[in-house]
Structures are given as structure tokens and as C-alpha cells.
Image 1 (cartoon, rainbow, N blue to C red):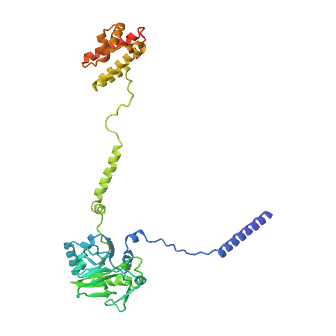
Image 2: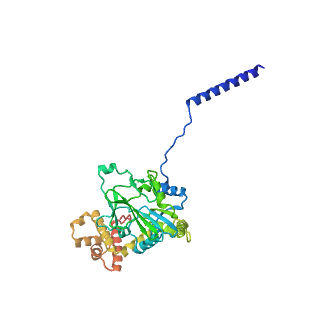
Image 3: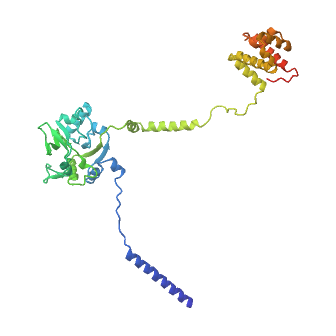
Length: 387
């Protein structure tokens, strides 16, 4: 009975401790949400018009972002609006004609030049054909402070003026008087529009207000919606640059590239395998010393070095005689040959030809070598010859 009571008391104490710890934790800690900015996604960094695409999709429009100059040179007939972030260099004449025909058939082209051309650089032919050119100003301190100030513009069919943050350092100059829409700036215009057949051409001094970080400001999203409403499919061309050669190859011949890479890998793998019979890598028997000397002498003979060897040998034999018999030093060459001949068993003439005459013929060379051996042997009558 006592043990049960002790267990019950222990459980109650444990529950009290747990309850106290829980109360302390709830009094000293609270749950809060934290927002962590992860920055732009890879797609948003690649496509500066992604936010505009998502906005128009939520408006129920058929909209898609594109990249590639071919979409500018050959726009699809079912596309109603083509917004080009950077018009880039001039198109080929036939491509420019096709683009204008697409506009006249009911398309709406919204473009902005990338930068003002240099003095010796031609401008974009499409803009020049409409008498439009871009001017970029060097900003002063006052203009820098006003660079982000919105410009008030009127839009036909919309009651209130729109506030759009055009870049005041970029303006369009217009030489024609038949424009259908103008949004003035300080010295020129920020927007120029032309009615072409059933379509429309809108030229903007800049379109940075349509990019991901600026479309949420002022009336930028509203202007994009007004420019694209009730005109069919919308295509946002965020890059009209010519793709690289590798990109074109991959786009048009992806299977060929994959096949070539696979063939290369198989070729490298195949090179690791041997072909043909296995070579015998065993050690060869060591060559006999006499064979080695014979081969060396034949090689030297082939190089015509036998004469030099014979002269050297003759010099060594004569030196040995002079060392063994110092009195020979005082004798002249004729007396020396006679003295050596008397002690070697050779005639004085033979000794002279052996020591001092260079043989030319092969037979005489052999005879001279044999005589040198006799002269050397005569120095050691006991048979202990040393060379």
C-alpha cells in the first residue's frame, strides 16, 4: 500500500515539474515568422521581363517570354503583340519588310533601342525609316536626383494620366509630323507611335520600367496591360541577340551532337584495350663478350675509325718500349726501329711501317695489327702481356 502511494506521489511531482517547465517556456518564448530574402531565381536573372509575363498571365492573356533574334525577324502570324526589350542592330531588308508587313496585318510591335549609335556608326534602319533617333544625355547632378521621377502621360481611353518612370537621360528625336502618339520629355519624346495599316508601332526611349524590379512601381504594370489588352497572344522578347554558334548547333542538331559525344567516349574507352598479339617482354640472354667486341669493331670499321684506333695502338706500343728501354729515347727513328727489330724478330723496315706508317689497304691494316701484337709480346717474353 505504501509503495503505491509513493509511486502516485512521484508521478504527481513529475507532472508538476513538467507543467512548470512548460509554463516557463511559454512565458519566455513566442513563435514568430521570419522572412528571408533569397534573391531572384535563376529564371528571373535570365529573363528581366519574367514579372511582366506572370502579371499578364494572371490577366488571362496568352503570353510567353522568348529569346532569339529569329522571333523578331519572323514573328508568328497568330501573335498580336511583340514587345522587344532591345531592338539591336538593323535587320536585313527582307526581314525588315516582313516585320512591317506583320504590323500592317494587325500586329503591335513595341520596341526600344538599346543605345544611341556613335557618330561614325549607323543607326537602326527601322527607326531611321520613321525619322526616329535616340539621344542619350550626360546626366548632371540635378538630373541625377530627378532620374527616378515619374513622367505623367496620357493614354487614349483611360481617364487619369499614368505615372511612368522613364529614364530622363534618354529621349527620342522625331523628324516626321505624321506621328499618331507622342509622350513628350524635356527636349524630345519618351514614346512615339505610328499607325501602320491595321497594326501599330510603339517606340519607347527605354523600357526598364517593365523589368522585374520596376514593374511594381507607379503605373508600369497598368501601362503594360493597356498596351497588350484585346490584341491576342503576347510575346515578350527579352533578348533579340543572335545566339552563339554552339547554341544554334545544339538547337538544330542536338541528336547529332549527342551521337558525336557518345562516339568520342566509346573511342576513348576502346583505346584502353590492346590489339594484336602480346609482345614478348621476357629478358634476352646476355651477349657474349667476344660477340660484343666483334660487333663494336665492325661498327667502328663501318664509321671509318679503324685508322685512328691503329694509330692509337701504335702509339701505346711505342710508349711501352720507351718506358721499358729508356735508352731508345736518345736514338733517332731509324736506329730505334733497328734496335727494336733485333729484339722482336722483325726487320727494321717492318717495325718502321708498323709504328709510323698509316696503312690504307685492308690487308695491310690487318698485317700491321698483327705486328703490333708481336711487338707487344716481345716486351714480355715470359708471356705476361699487359696492354
